[in-house]
Length: 162
Image 1 (cartoon, rainbow, N blue to C red):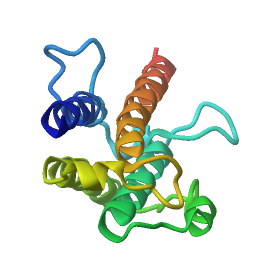
Image 2 (cartoon, one colour):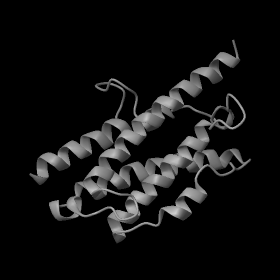
Image 3 (tube, rainbow, N blue to C red):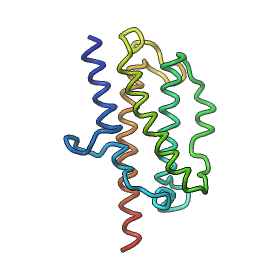
Image 4 (cartoon, rainbow, N blue to C red):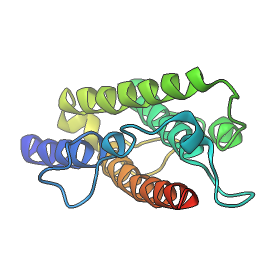
């Protein structure tokens, strides 16, 4: 059973996280970010709305939380909630660092899932809820959801120049 479940989880993570556009009905999170500069990443359509950059940091934070549960069996969600949606750096180089960190996390989650066995996948995801397998699947759908938001934001950003 592990191989089929693990293959499905890995497919979700790959398709939503880093797959090339060919073969997917939506762009993966990392492909959506190709060519996005710091100005576009920082832009927001209205006060109080997230930017592409804020979404990248949000996704990275929750991937880190999943890795914490995979590695240690528990994560305290309170500090994560407090850290989510914080201020963005003014430094454009920080955008590239945040993109690279997201790419590292996308691949690291995939590697950890590839190495997982049934016992680990069935373990409770303490602090996040459900089992690790459920949280892994939700992590993939989280990527797809935010990739769609990012594509919408980038279209709005591009329309600013028209």
